[in-house]
Image 1 (spheres, rainbow, N blue to C red):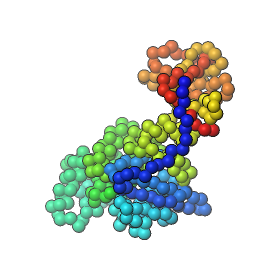
Image 2: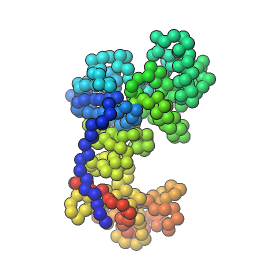
Image 3: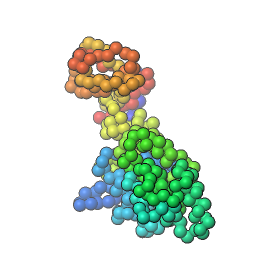
Image 4: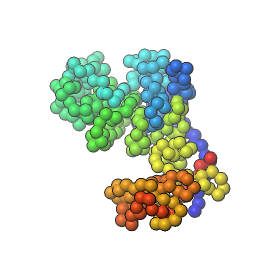
Length: 332
């Protein structure tokens, strides 16, 4: 079986103009660098998913870009340095997980809050178009408390898009929604951003959400960006073990030439009898997911088609690599 030699992936400067550039952003809180010299570029009409564990600095970075928190470094919006401008003058749209709608204003008043310089007729047309965009026609006269959580989040997105900002920042916008609503809203948010050709940064701790929604994915840890690339490359060619394991279940098998091979659950099979042992199994509909303790003391996760013979918890087994593709090699 051949392997691919892994090496650090360096983000290449995009040939097209950047919608937003964050250069050497650093934010120190209590003597600790919560954001530690981050460089990040968002291309025109791109949705960049910024993912990482809780406390890694994602939201702080977003707030620094928006101008809501002081930070060292530069923020450029379509080439214009806006670092010295307050948040309200940066022309950056913001959507938070708690919606942040004005409770005493109707939907139409929330939507036109940032475009009050337009004529009455222009604002009325904008409200109608925005409500159509987020699939909520007819709700202009409602108050926020009369809307569901999903409806409030759609209105929050529409309000952020109303002034036609070059970039919208979304900070965990689906975190407070149930799973079914979250899935449908993700699709609608992407569709609305695409229709307006608006660039965006989506902050999330959900790896599936990042891989599903991002044109590119940036993985953050301890205040630094570890890797930025297309979802499939970040998942299949991670720069290190942390990125590999954070974006999905991963096992690491020794490579004869040094380093390790990264193996995903679907690259493994499990056979009855042998030196390994079944610790757990879960039925997921199309697959059985096994937790295996290997003879060398490591633990791995393997996924087998649902029609295969079940090996019970506690029984011995053998885990083998059966990947039909090149495995990615990481340096130790």
